[in-house]
Length: 308
Ligand code: NAP
Image (cartoon, rainbow, N blue to C red; front, side, top):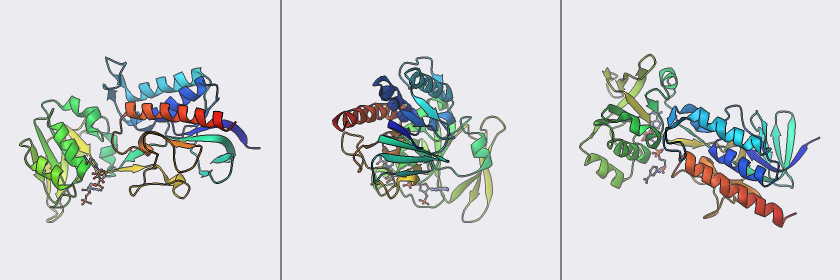
């Protein structure tokens, strides 16, 4: 027998857990399908210094544990498994999790996005220890350092520019000799004296045992290898929204992000709301994700009240 709920939340980063706190406090008894990699991208971060309310900073996993505890305190329930499929054409909505089926009058999607990574073993090992995917989150730690940014799109140039506020030198490593980024971002980067460019180069190894000490590069034209001593490597080669479950069911934009109505978390299906990085490719911050999670909860509550 399927378990029926007024609200099911899929995803458990700052957006999903904020939606859980709000819907739980509204007595909607939400169930959070938190996923096997529960907690979202903050679980891959070390120190979080820009989340308001924590003047001394807090570790990403600790912050997410607190979010979860707060949601549980008000009665949110958690299913520690991935959602395998959703059916959004009929009512109630159906969410398949292994052998279980959860039915829901409203659905909040907060499955987040994943930073695209180079896929190197050393990159994964040093993530949070010199390797980062978020300049806004971690740039501050590189005051006075020499660092690299990998990528040639708008994100890479934006991050490189932002990081020159802290780092003494930022070397942008791009696999081709032409940037993908927009002209205006290119002009800005070329005019920045703190940014250097390494063309036709790819990172083949992040060096260091427990913290980053450098990168090994390969020239994509000649195959020649070299090393660069740096303490930071920001990987900015794009993000992948986690929308595989919803591709045919909900409207997505050209980059795969869920489309929500302006100033709202409403998706293309009535009663289905999306919050956090799965629908936001602009801000991508824990605090903005949490804010949109609150919006989704309030919109779900109003939707349920109007349809009860
Ligand atoms: P993107 O435009 O897809 O660029 C990704 C970059 O990473 C490309 O230069 C690509 O190289 C490189 N790359 C991809 N896989 C790689 C790999 N395995 N190894 C090395 N390099 C790799 O992604 P984005 O920069 O995140 O931008 C995404 C979207 O958001 C774009 O539409 C962008 O315009 C927009 N955006 C806008 C702004 C802004 O306007 N302020 C800021 C950020 C993002 P190739 O060029 O060789 O493919």
